[in-house]
Image (cartoon, rainbow, N blue to C red; front, side, top):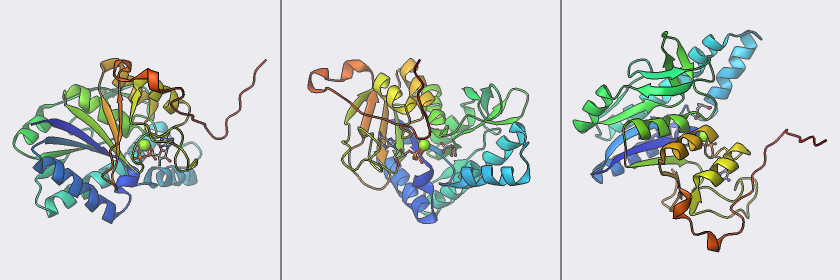
Length: 267
Ligand code: ADP
Ligand code: ASP
Ligand code: MG
């Protein structure tokens, strides 16, 4: 029996139908004999909508209150996903950052996870339940709700994989893997079957948001293999792991990334 982290990004839970679809994937994985911890993002667009609302209230919305506001998106999706799992007969339970707790350090809106208490989650999955953990959320040592940066659910998934010592960390998203360039912008982009942490880090630091760069960095430091795969098709995804697993004789260029609204000035 394998212990797995399954992370569902915003687009994978962007509507009620999609949440029900994600629940079916989780059920299938559990019925395959695996022990499952799910990490879930806010429904697509929700975090941006909340940021806009804070701006409409005040230009000086504090970072502390912003974190209270923004992390609410993950609370909604966690509960809806658990509801969908219960509805199809899967024992599932969600916990918020402060209930687990997921301890972070650093400033509000840009914290990082330093520890996750394993007790409640381990007990629940050992009893045959699916544990649902909110991505992106944390709590500081002094009790403030925190968030870990945009796209941070990827980093939560990697932290969970590390701390719970899981056998795999699967990142479910709206594309079926990592491509040589953004497949939604460059239709001829090629899917990459395997990519090293270093190359993935380079792609994500240069704007490939399919994996958040700090999540890739943590995975690289702790040698946690990742797999990026589609929530909507059964196609094989992309494996991200150490360089020793890649056959470099076959490759010249892995990928090309770009970021919008950025200029480079060279003197
Ligand atoms: P999620 O909501 O699952 O976290 P994101 O929107 O953060 O998903 O990341 C997935 C998106 O990343 C894709 O829809 C795609 O447009 C974009 N993307 C950018 N660069 C790449 C790339 N090289 N390979 C795959 N997807 C990419
Ligand atoms: N909901 C957060 C965001 O939109 C975290 C995530 O989706 O990974 O940035
Ligand atoms: Mg993302």
